[in-house]
Image (tube, helix red, strand yellow):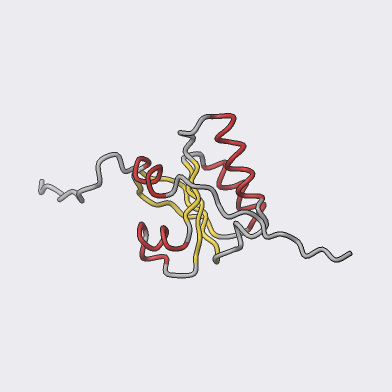
Amino acid sequence: MAAIPSTPQVCGARPLQLLLAPSGQLSHDGQLRELIAERRDRQGANVELWYLRPVVLAALLPEHGAGQEAVVAADPAVITWLQLRFGGSVSTAVLDPQQLHNRAGGLPPRAPLAAVTL
């Protein structure tokens, strides 16, 4: 029986759930920021939920192209709920959680201030 060559993986990398959408679709209204901040408050800073800005997404997963943003989570139910809330497409990607903590540990942008006239 012939041996099947294995593909080398980054240490600690494993399949994680990915929600992809055009830039701004996930983060434009500030609700994703609030959700991630709340989860980190409740479950700790090491909760496996990350927001990938377009530049970070392009660096980690160049095949997804420019103009996209993403959310990555270990829990498929979180990604399913976010897809129902924000739209986008679900995928799986092999990523290293430690690298995600280092490169995508920030929060999505704040919601823009509403123009108020008196």
